[in-house]
Amino acid sequence: MTALLSIRDLSVAYRGNGREALKNINLDVAAGERIAVIGESGSGKSTLALVIAGLLPPSARIEGHIDWQTTEFRSSHSFAPPSVLPEMSGRTEGAKDRQPKFVPLGGRDIGLVFQDPSASLDPVMTVGKQIAEVAHTHLGLDWPQAFARAKTLLERVRLPDPDAAMHAYPHQLSGGQKQRVAIAAAIAASPKLLIADEATSALDTIVQAEIVSLIRQLVAEDGMTLLFISHDIALAAELADRIAVFRHGELVELGTTAQIASAPHHVYTRALLDAHIGLDTEPMLRRAGASV
Amino acid sequence: MSSPLLAVSGLAKGYHRGGKAIAAVDNVSFAIGPGETLALAGPSGSGKSTIARLVLRLVEPDAGRIAFEGDDFLALNGAALRARRARLQMVFQDPLAAFNPRATVARVLNDPLRIHGIASRAERPRRIVALLERVGLSPNLASRAIHEISGGQRQRVAIARAIATKPSLIVLDEAVSALDVSVRGDILKLLLDLQTKERIAYLFISHDLGVVRAIAHRVVILDAGRITESGDARAVINAPQSAIGRELVAATPKLHRTTAP
Image 1 (cartoon, each protein chain N blue to C red):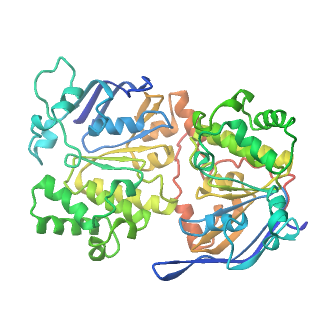
Image 2: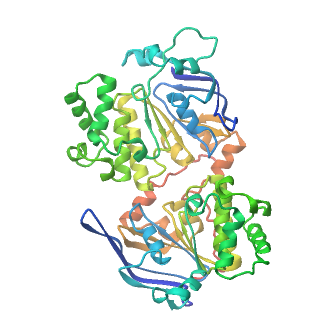
Image 3: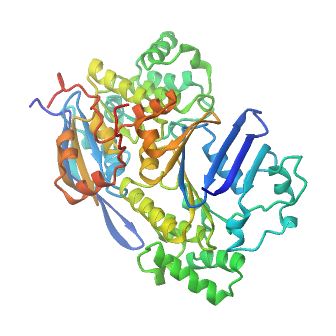
């Protein structure tokens, strides 16, 4: 197994409360795997997404390393010039490391999809332009090529009537359609890693299932690595090969989906499984005494 | 069957979007008995929340009738409506949005006691302590601001506020959807306990069929503003007959465990 990224002794603290959002995390993400990070509020799961994508605010204190498997990226893209991101490489590398390291670039090497597509998309730019911009910026395509790629992507994310959608504005689309556009923009530069942070949490159950199935298909077709961040252990189990359970900033358990779902080691993982209310859960309602 | 607590018949509400008329709720009828939980389930845009708003009279219907505690609820106005509203309360998904974030817990609970004339000024502090204890919160929380307490605590305060006026029906619109799973179970237990002891009925709106099946007596499944099927919650969810019912069940994430935990 080749690790696409190796997280070593990673801790993150935000300025203000001084509490560590992540504490001493060690995690390898294999190239091509689908790994889910699950946890409740305050578990640090979103901080993990942000630190991997290099999107933490400059005030955040980061210790430890994230090491990237350069050969995985070299095949599709040139190196990021270290001068472009001096601050970020300085923060993610430990003080011991003096050599310039490969630092992946958000949008090009890492695609990101968040919970609220309305916040990710520009409300006054057409959908086609937003996707084309990614291809133009990161792949160096000229505009006609970039727009052609945007249309192909809208077809790939199965947006109804991609021709019309190219000229539509985000507010003209439903929540599920907007999330499809956000996914198209996230994969426009053929990233190696796709991070979906609660990407289906604001959607209803039916649309959620469609988006999960779309993500599964796109990840398989493009050979992407998937980091799927969710509060929903059942949803994570449907999509992921491995599950990492986070609580209060710590990685409490890491295992294959089957092991986590069927034979959890940690008491907290077991508590999460027990708290899941599925279609086969014993109803909580006692029927006696209820009116008809 | 005893006379229903709430009986809704032929309810309709439409609105216009981009010059097109859209039926948000189209000829919807259902009834809830005392101490019963009726769930409304359906995809986004199926009309669940519009029905909640209509029942609460936050919006007025285009057509239909709502009988609550034996009276024509839509005919009530002014003081009579305000008085009856004490019996029909609500808890929403996001209590932070429902409350003034800078208000203290005590003030949030004091308001309904004062407005509905339930307790005298001198008696209210004692009632607030009793309400907090009833929903499993420490009375020490009374002086804290709404924004300072956790999401689960805040939802307990919302429930305490709702039961302050001794309602017979509470509309719960996605009231547990935003909670962490470890907190959700305790809130559901609290709701069931209140129902058993105070005989409160719930109109429980949720997109989560697992939760609906766990706590509702009956379920109404909606699609595009219309009822597609209804019946015993477990029976409907175990074997849905409508296309949208089957789609909702199929889309619900399933946790496959090979061995017992």
